[in-house]
Image (cartoon, rainbow, N blue to C red; front, side):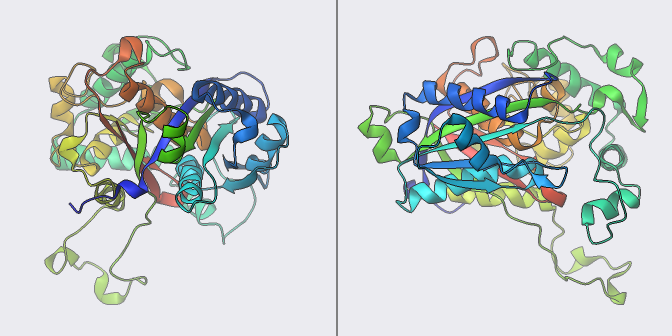
Length: 398
């Protein structure tokens, strides 16, 4: 790993969230509540915020109703610059990256990053209509709905590593145990493996309780330069050490005739696009996977949590299920994964969830997570999958 630069660090002065659930409110109310809590937590006055970076969702043809400006208006126009980022589930990380760039460039000292969502009931789907130029619409047209996508990856694990449905259920049981202690989680119930096995089959081998629900919710951060943090007496604040939003790479942009049925690994190493995300983050932060104490990963399905553990290099390929069986990913284990309860307990509130992951890690690194505290946590990493397959990974540290 190359050495990271302290010049890329920014301070997390405040965190705030609106509890996840189905509350029947406008998405702005969720974001404003989270933003005000983050401001209070930071000790920074709203009037001192120089940049508002909003994470947007895309529904009804208008991206989050112009989220950055909408949140700034709801909090009261005070002259800050605004930004809106849209990358589906990676929107929060991209909004945070925009704020970090603004701070590191010297254009502002302190910024508010906020994301919030109201989701429809049931599984997420694209807008209706014939839209062949929309890659997300095309993949649904081909039958690759979200549950189908999750199930294909779960089948792959079963085939390659011998994982079982019982292994997947253990992930749900573990995350439910964690989320039971989280006041912001939507589902606060200790589920058993029998509960998971009794739930309806959605996309074989995944049952309903293997797949996360949709939710409403909001999350926000107040971030600043290290100099500003020191100036207000917060020099010991948790820091953002790296943000990765890299896209996949391929050997060829066009599949040619010789590519079909060719083992490309004979020439170059095969790679996973998800595995590329943390590589950039580790290099930027100047740390290795062995330095990570806690992880918040994107458990859209129970089986995908196992894939992410391996993509983040937290364990060897094919070993994630054994780690879960051994209790290594539980709080108190070798490397707790999703101490917040993850999407299993929160559900998807699309533009808020990447920020919610950073909120959780910040509380963990501050030692303020209460009953779900990971003892001695000093480095945390997030991972999630965003717009049409790319994603993001954020590293925070003490």
